View 1 (cartoon, helix red, strand yellow):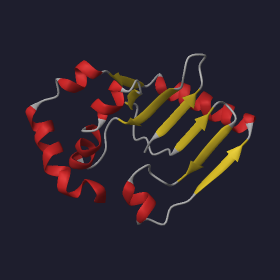
View 2 (cartoon, helix red, strand yellow):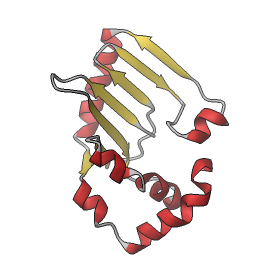
View 3 (cartoon, helix red, strand yellow):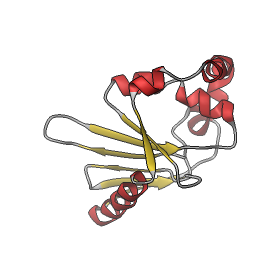
View 4 (cartoon, one colour):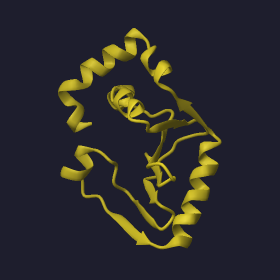
Length: 137
């Protein structure tokens, strides 16, 4: 459900995360969104895909390293689910994935810190209710 692009610009690391804009379970969505503030304050760019269901699990780093697979970047996937990813050290594959990622970003909505902070009461309530089971979602 997540695409991540990391690259090393001249003055540090740029991390861009592309998440699905809509999923079939609102409490799962709100559980993950509760952590946006920390990520945004750290300078991570968060975008939500708007053109349909995003189910890709890809990541590229520095245009030469890539991973593609079924693993979500969450505790449940790492600890419980039988997931698998391919890890590639290949400029051509990483470049192709970066092009797809850039295209997907054109169909996304960027989340900024002020927008996240102004989320409504219902969303905050779902975030709170998800705390006891967050590690299992």
